[in-house]
Length: 225
Image 1 (cartoon, helix red, strand yellow):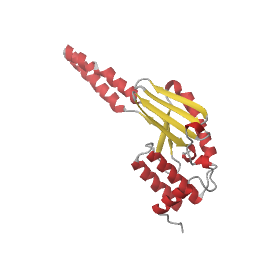
Image 2 (cartoon, one colour):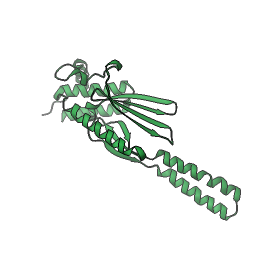
Image 3 (cartoon, helix red, strand yellow):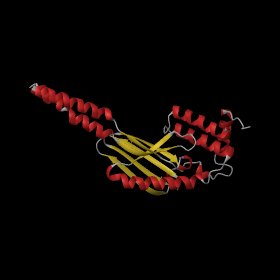
Image 4 (cartoon, helix red, strand yellow):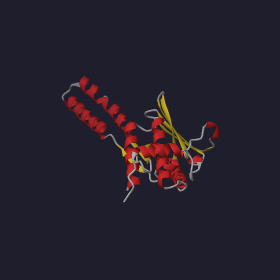
């Protein structure tokens, strides 16, 4: 019969773990800036909506992700040992914008046929703007999720000119994920590490409270099954 684990046990185990046991300290602690050794960088730019996503891979299995949109930016650091080695291919197509553009074009042509010149010009002028909104929001990407919590962590965009480079970078991440995961211990030490890593992400603002609770339930189910 599987052992039923309580949330109180998880907190105690996670606090006691803190890099001890058979798991090397470097796999559970994020190195500070003085200890980091940069190995690979990748930058993706979206010119239409002025978005930039920069990745720094350091110390074998840590990934710093910096996102900037206009003047706003945020930074997150992920321990690849706790990331799934099977990224999810995702496609985002906001067809609603294209549909509205088609409707406005049809309306503009109808007004033109009725010889309402000024109104037809005003309506048809919105069509390129709507089409641009559609283009700005189209995305193809590889989504990386946490291994046991299975919650979204970060994405690598794979569109246009950067597709080949993005695919190579994603393949490198998968390679590092598998190498790091192979060193993780099993049993309650792995459970404690999983909980500690997800808690670190939510404390850093890299994971929402709602996703953290969802991840926690999935982790508990995995070790109770």
